[in-house]
Image 1 (spheres, rainbow, N blue to C red):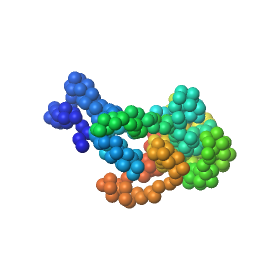
Image 2: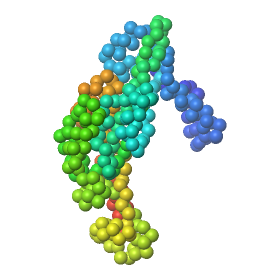
Image 3: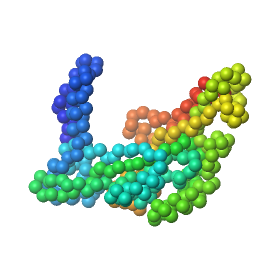
Image 4: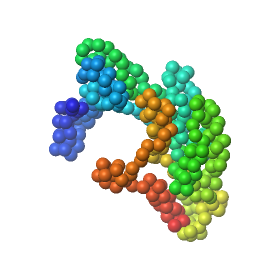
Length: 296
């Protein structure tokens, strides 16, 4: 199958030739590109073929039986995922059973995720029989501070200890109890080296820059009002949470918290290049900020 329109391909050629788009071409390109991801009500196979593929795997049926790609999900970000989880049923939306990730905290860490179940939408097969197909669902996330390797080890240990619950209310209560062992203030996270922070000088700090030296402990400078430490937002996937979101939309809620057989080597071989270490990226961001402040 060719998931791009012929005009979309023509416009890409024009872009290469011209070195850019005019305003009219840009608008047309967006319209043509949207066709790639438009919902397709008309299947390319008969109902029996669809059912056969669906029994093997829902994603196989989604890829093989329709003429284009379906956007799996979009991921809006929220500041209160517990409120979102509670509101979805009020709006007639079926949420995932559990919010994945850490519990609600004063200082959010990593990320918390939930989703609503994929919608059953009407489709028409080539034998003119009507049916339904599920592909599109919504994911919602609340992001917190990125953790250092030490912080991530503690997080993984506590999450494993907490296990999983059958309903979100009891699960979150149990998570909070277990995660009492994880420091919940920015000061303690910095002091114990559990999370990454970005440092910057205040106007008062700028005025006293000559008094700041490489290797200085940032905490007294923060207390003096010369330096501000801001949590660096975690911008990666949380593997267990991501697995839970997709498994719940593949009809397998029981596997929502299971770990896959991760293989970095196999992934890099398939990708054709090395993957950057996520911890090094956050560490570099923190160190750059310290250098700007004169702390390194």
